[in-house]
Length: 376
Image 1 (cartoon, rainbow, N blue to C red):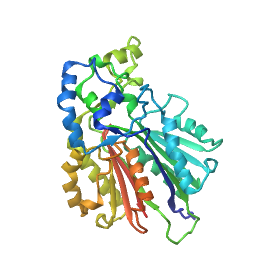
Image 2: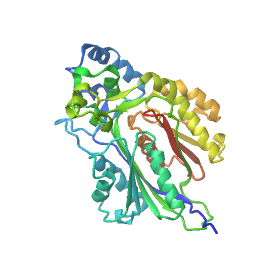
Image 3: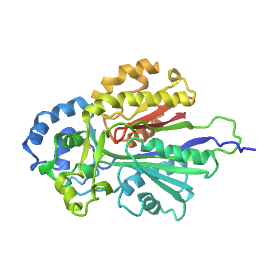
Image 4: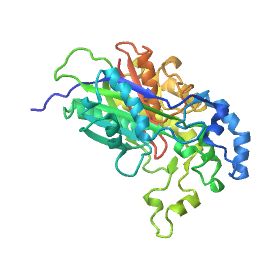
């Protein structure tokens, strides 16, 4: 006889944005000016950069950078800790109560040990199960799926899920080999930001029949880029170290460590892929799109939002008020944005009892979408 699955709910949320908000006109001061970049790059930043920022819809963002020393103020683990602690506090739990810790981030503090284990230590958890997911925007859905399934099956009674985005490590002028950088690598300085989010998941008692606060109705993960070129890349890993005469110094000299993006592919694919992924998730969970009360998307700029929102409204049968652009005062923090905005909504009382919230993201690195659905 198969045991009944446990229902899972979100007992606490947390979010963190490092340091003071940075207005658009101070981005280059905080990240460091690209004075040694090729003339075409400097010309792009001077002529196109202000237009990018104006159309982005973002008025300020946060960087884990000390504005005086320009040193990083946080690592991935410490950024995650700052979101994890308020999530635990909101759930009324101590770090030592955590049975499963799942960390998702596109970068890590060291190749080994896993940053998830470092975060465990920082939180003061002597013993727990821990997992780390190396992914960008879709990492939040992947982490949620692992935790949700584990709690449903009864393997653990609770889970702390933490998502970190430390983009500034790739964006400071000191990181680049400026002589070989290109315009798109420079442009990402005007799009990405730092932040972290966390949720504490709890499994309900077996057979629980009544309503649950912020119950997770399901998760969804897909990778659709099996036959597509990557939309975002950052080298410096094993694939760039195959040849014995091309090691770390050669990686730097060729600029292979730079974060890069195919903006044309993102403008063409990100919106449609995000929408189709969300529709497949809702279909799989048997949820009518028209009955969803809030949609929270991982859309980095108002320009991309405006270019796709009409199609989103039509296909989802949802008014504009149900899918607001929420990054205006936080900046775009990749997958962490979903939990940042969700925490904001929870603490503001925006999600009413019984309302359905869809949170979904698209990742351009190799074209993935992932998300989850919550009933308030």
